[in-house]
Figure (cartoon, rainbow, N blue to C red):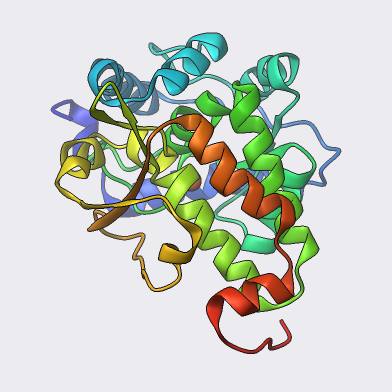
Length: 276
Ligand SMILES: [Fe+2]
């Protein structure tokens, strides 16, 4: 970002991020989502990223992502209030947001999904690096996840992931459910008319990821093939899994989450269960 706000110091940024995180630090699920008075630099980051991403989405995002995003109609020219987007999302697909101060633990995050709740941050990334954030921020959570949660199919898949996580006891099973989530709902790619299109939240919410994802080593989406693949959320993904259609994603991943348990995942991993 070329604006004056790119000069913001790390210390000033951390203070601001801390202020916003503090608003949701002690909230219960029943509490309303806090209203944040966003500043000029935050609106500028939002506009900068959204304008660029929307242009990229026309060529790089999957049809279902685009259609779902159109339904939710998140504003591009200013940072929206999470409570307003949550209300709109609820009326479309039944999902809603809950404000979180930071990344929530996997079991808690998945527990929310089972109840049609997505934990979202409310702060924005550093204005010095608007196109990259290692931690989830409001842009990632709304442009990446919120936009697909307006789709009945995606909402169903997110709920299935949450239900699967609630069903298992072992740490290994939970981690594997999280890995399937990572390679699909975070980094999934689908072929449309011979072209690779992104539907995963990490890809569609990052200009850099959209630049890089077609250079990945692509493998056909298959649950067993995920077992031996490791991933690092702090870098561009060297290996991605692609499906021939969203029906195939739903068949493979939805069926897995719908039926998996500790024993079936232990068998898949070829190991023994250990308590969480
Ligand atoms: Fe995410």
